[in-house]
Length: 93
Image 1 (cartoon, helix red, strand yellow):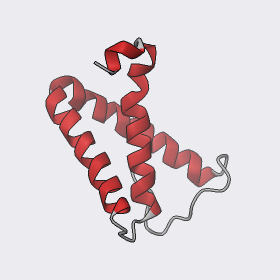
Image 2 (spheres, rainbow, N blue to C red; image 1 turned 180 degrees about the horizontal axis):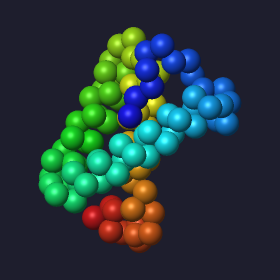
Image 3 (spheres, rainbow, N blue to C red; image 1 turned 135 degrees about the vertical axis):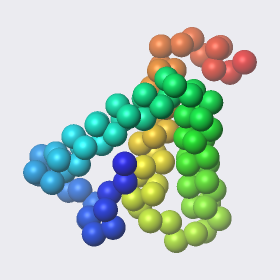
């Protein structure tokens, strides 16, 4: 899910390397979804741990790699995507 350490922040979303990475990430998401369907608790706990530990480390002044933050943001966005259709009172109760 994470960019290689040798990768630079993508400037052109249409570059061959970026397209390959996005396609590879999509394939990994299929596997991730399968794990989520088999063991939702494992899926939710793993994502919550990844996201919270990344941002906690960042807020504590750690010299956080942009690649780790990008993965945490990506996973947080993806995790919240199904909630978009729910009324707000379901999320706040």
